Amino acid sequence: MSSTKLSENRLRQAGLGVFFRPGQLERLGIGYDQLRRLVSRGAVERVGRGLYRLADAEPTENYSLAAASARVPNSIVCLLSALRVHGIGTQLPREVWLAIPHKARAPRAFGTQIRVVRFTGAAWTYGVQDTTFERVPARITGPARTVVDCFRFERLIGREAAVEALRDGLRQKRVMTDELVRALDVLPSRALTAILESAVL
Image 1: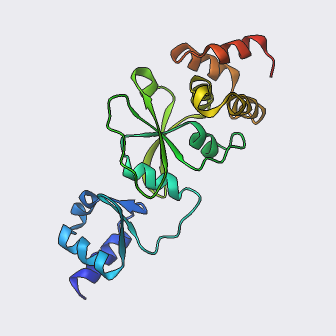
Image 2 (image 1 turned 60 degrees about the vertical axis):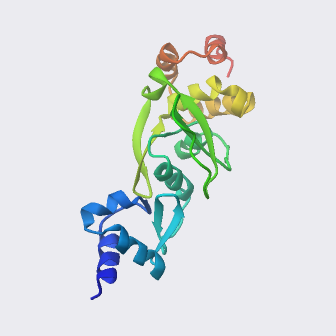
């Protein structure tokens, strides 16, 4: 068996996500020259600077989320994208909404459209969960945190989408009022606080 074919087999058996970076291949004994040969054979595709995918990987509904999380590893899936993952509301965003640290450099454009927001301080950690998309490690805001963020970033997503997220999250019991109150203690939103105090849902 050729070294390139052997590398391809190792790659498929390694349990990597659909998307991967060259540095992840070092532990498999696959060097950059072998990766280039896999690309020339068509077994692997280069989808962006320093980002590759298995050519025959079947895309799923989380394909864009996996691509964005692999492309921007120090990020958090948030707002409309997090709502979709959690099954809250009816928003179907064309872009992947990602939060990055306040002073981080914005990611360069690549195949997947990304909408960037900035988190800092407690916003970077509170209510954030570890997850995976297509076996690609990722982070995402939890349901209650996502609803609170919809009001915090209301100017970006619109009041209607924020209120829909609140109503649907409570209706489906994916979000509890006490969770929202705790989140508001850390990440205040006057608009959401007013709605909860008025109990007009």
